[in-house]
Length: 475
Image 1 (cartoon, rainbow, N blue to C red):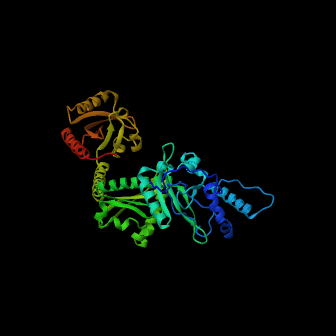
Image 2 (cartoon, rainbow, N blue to C red; image 1 turned 90 degrees about the horizontal axis):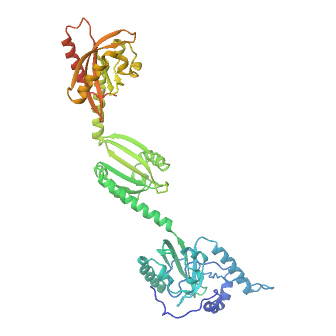
Image 3 (cartoon, rainbow, N blue to C red; image 1 turned 180 degrees about the horizontal axis):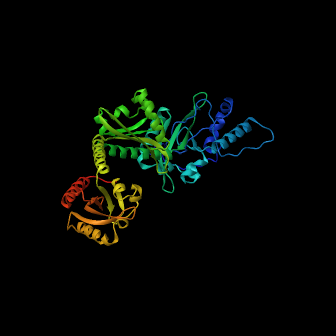
């Protein structure tokens, strides 16, 4: 701690006009009045030990003091009464501000002159700030104490002001971040009148900054470990606060190209203008996804809001992934599906899929010609509504063979009921398809007719058709 004088008993001044400061003010009363209306000052009274910070007010030429002394009522105003009245007005003004003010005498033992009531936010009795010379040793966080007090000693020796941010341990054990600014106040002739300061509670800002640092560290770790990905974080001014990931290197970009710079400083106007729209939408709470292709490949870019624990949006994030290979595979699958779908729809046989309960999942349009049902109507039906009742057990028996593994594929004949109520005999070749842990039956149907050269040829053809569609995903 900053030890300015050895310990010795000190009476508590009732106000700046009493005790240690009484003579000081008497000597300077004429000068204070001569410079016009008094102004207020700020920061903490620490007695013989204190940290402080540079005042935000320029008070080097117009000193004043604030105390808890009530105004003196007199029948006739006098220069002294005018001074006290002005002092009382500024005292009330200061005490209604959401900041903490203090002042101490400029020389050791730095007797406290004033402590604003807002110091009560720390939980310690106000009188301790006026009488306990060790209070700043007790309330300042141990990790900050030596730095703040040593720098204060050095600044006071040079006649300079100070601006610090440090932690205060409250009486209930909680910790607050404060910004403490203080300096010497001088009279017209340059004499030191007091050391004054102002303290602001900056806990919310510091916690937000710490949370942002923590989140940025997490995002940087994710960006560096997820393959084929890059992550950018930007603030409400479109200024990048983080840039990392494999895709930066793939594009021959560096973090330094982004971090600390705005969207408009990094990219040419035509690109920046387009992406500024996406950034605004993200900061308004919208998730935006854009797919783009260029000579380097195909990419999916997501622009999304980043929220704090209360749901507030404090930043935006851009994440882009190389989806070149994924898109190539997807396009190949779509092409394959289109090719098989064409075969499915143009086949001469009825080809359908039903689930294990007999509900049709997919069926081609040949059903309209063979059975007379419209496609939409057939899709709403069950196997039990088409196969005649006396043949349902045969259907279930053949399905059971495939479920138990006794047969990979079965062929059999059943009678089916057409739309007009007549019957037709169909030969069914069926196999099972396992998709997403469920079983679906793929079947090929064809009405028997005298034109067929033989049942054997029919069966071979049905099996051939079914084999093609067993490879085809049905939807």
